[in-house]
Length: 145
Image 1 (spheres, rainbow, N blue to C red):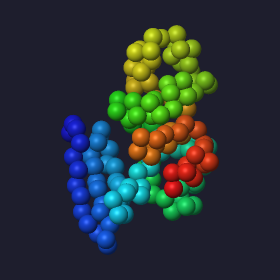
Image 2: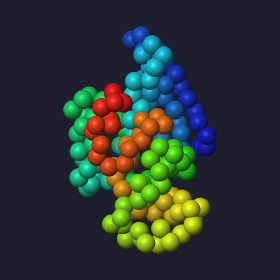
Image 3: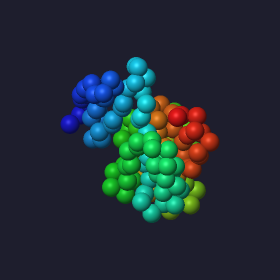
């Protein structure tokens, strides 16, 4: 399925929007017109910082969507959104196996490499709409609440 499909429902005075975007369901809950929840965590289940990020949001009872990078890579749109927020260099893990090959490539080829090889990412990548962080950054996330 390509593009974006949205379903909107009213429940307990709140509007809930479900969107199908890039083969991922996104859930947004609106209260008085503003979005309350739209957190995505991209990482791996074995990554310590990703586990800490999940725990951060669980402890605050903030709903989030976890995307396992071993199973699914970021889409072009998701990568563009994160890249615009944090920059391309911040996304790449210097301990990744193909780190040198990545920085030797042209900028256009770097994006292609990231889309093809999800082992290059530094994790967790946490998105809140157009805002994003890379790594464990609870100080930044607390401003999103």
